[in-house]
Image (cartoon, rainbow, N blue to C red; front, side):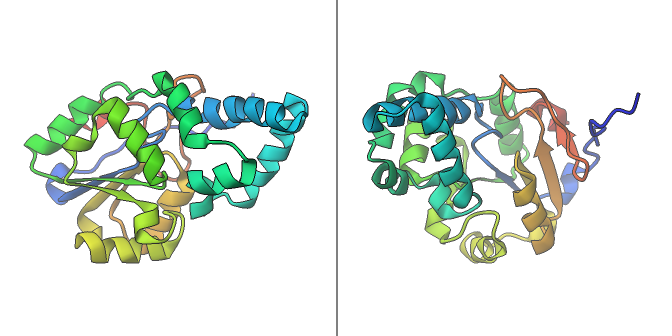
Length: 227
């Protein structure tokens, strides 16, 4: 029987060739189960109550709205969605923040990067209010030389202009930089820009099956990069 599942490509780089490590947040460092539950279950429940429609109708309507702004800054903008949906989304996120969790082996990997004297940056499309909630909950922010929100740059990571502006902001060498992300579209843009080492995080959610990239080296957990 033909197996359509991509075969895992293992990372083979040498750490000697890398100065800068850039890490996505949601699905990469943090379990994406929180985000999936929030946007696909919790928000539709509250939207259906607010607008007196069924949960199924709410899910259908919201999915269409989400798709219209996918891969743009608006997608992650809590103020945009609070206004659009008539809900206080930061408040709703705080109500379910017990679901926010760090993936296994992330802290060990951050320690490894610190000991190896790599520049360490958290690079996220998440809105600043979301970022604040998650950093307060997980306390991972202190590991990083800098935390960058896409709204600060003015473009989403899926847009090439993001990487031009990011390089101006951080002054890193793209060829000696590693990016780990759970979104192939982001990795594609980063590859086009010239980021030298790209890692796909295949286990973005603890509740979803692992799916490897056909193009990029994949990891299930960050312990695979500790050498």
